[in-house]
Length: 71
Image 1: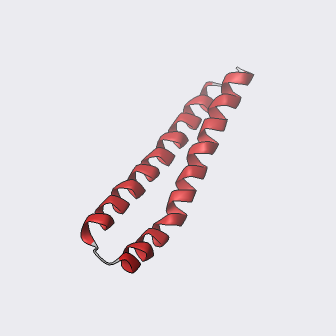
Image 2: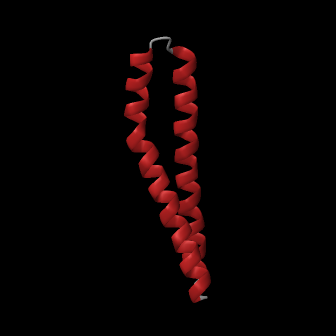
């Protein structure tokens, strides 16, 4: 079950990296834009990436838990 645990940890790290990427992009968008509509548009474009990263990190954590449970 070691490969499942380490694979899950890797998937979780990738998901967290995606969440950090979105956080940095939103922070930069807040600094760069003064217009509320443009800021909303930029954040809406980042929403699918945010949800995908959250999903990937949740799947990775599930892999780790399953690996620990079965191991």
